[in-house]
Length: 233
Length: 405
Image 1: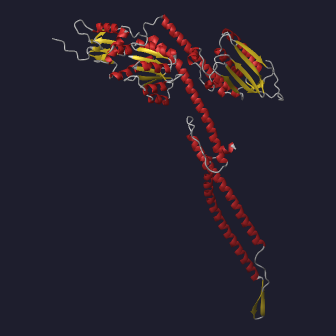
Image 2: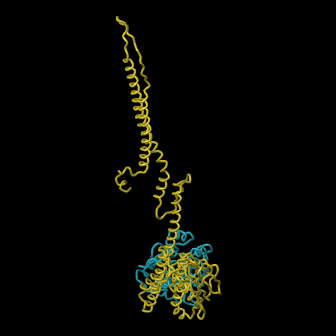
Image 3: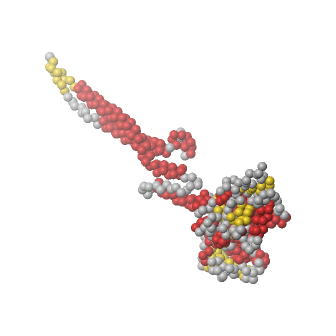
């Protein structure tokens, strides 16, 4: 999941980015409204954490412009961050199309909970736990189990699997994975996607089974979402 | 008066009842006096000048011996008749008078009650509106209609007062909102950094140090903001001193105070002052205003440039001018710089822990002295801030006497 953090408070934006990266999100940072719009034009973000008050273009304006011209088919979710808590401010924020609202100062755990909840809305899930086939992924505790057995994953592998599990059965191209799971500091010509998908597949595959992630030649990768066949007696 | 009020029973507390009572008593008293006067006058007149005259009438009664002349008896009975008629007339007058007075008393009570009610009606209205007005919502007004009389005057005065209160309250509310917003940002920075670092099991000493530094900077920023808020609030609500102040001395003291910080920045401050620049005001506040301007000038100045600090007299005004050779301020921002929490470069301002209240305080101090602060600047030409305060007239008889303490 790719997230853009926009705040003119540099140290706040950096801290949020640091924390979200550790949760397995691919995070970009913008310190000005203009930069935020520029980045949102280039990258199909899944979520934008947007500060309301910024010196150049304020958050309301950024949000309105994002909504006027959605850069992708699936517009990013917007979580407004603001130091203003009056009713009028909240209504104004939600009116221009923000999906949720968080008043500063906030506990970081609350921010991540809201981020998870907003991202869940896209994948149609309701709880913090995603389940596909034998696999279960707890987005809140960051735990993955396969047939009830915990699987050790790195943060990047976890992020990759989460994206697969949010889009089960769909063929995901390398470019899409790169856009949604890796941040702007990644070299677009790298083979990191192929390598990470390879290691993830190895970790998720038991000795005697077909791998749950298959390669669709020429298109990308797909997480197999049909029900696990009953084991032969 | 208070003692009388204390002796009155509780139901007399209503002005309407008191007015009615007063009206009724006065009317009754006057009517009673008139009727009494008529009665007494009439009864006197009737006694003094009886309508009956004494006639010497003789009646002859024939007897066997001739006539007996009877005299006096008849006259006496006539006089008795006369006075009996008078007494009855007075009696009736008294009866009707008492009856009329009784009716009058009742009527005067009713009329008094009605009139008092009418007179007091606008006051009722003023009271009910005043009662409805909450401290948080001062938007209601009395808007009393009717002739331009004393009560209308009173209501209009109330409305004016409410206007002033409303403006003051709104300003204060806005200020509190802005201030809390300004305080929340550093709090959010601290909270987010602490949460993220403490949640990280792999955080090493460098990470912790980095976080501690960020928290330190935020704390400093908040502390300065709170300091400036206090100064601002104090000047807003407490009156400044009104002493004779020699501006030249104030400016010289500030210049001396900033000599060292200016040197560290590689900026020199050129100070020039005319003698005898007397104003009425608060030396500490004026010093603070000049210090804020000078601190700003030093901050924006490029190393190796000069800041001109001049004070002098221009007509009826004493002015202090701080001219830097920094980047200047765009004309479109000239109005905004004096507003609360305005900062040219927000990120840089935060680094330096500036509150964004400095110039607001300068303007406030200048205006409190009956003066103003002016800005002359354009991008690339440096900025000149001028504080001007009315001068004490040179020929004023109260030429200030200075006592060195």
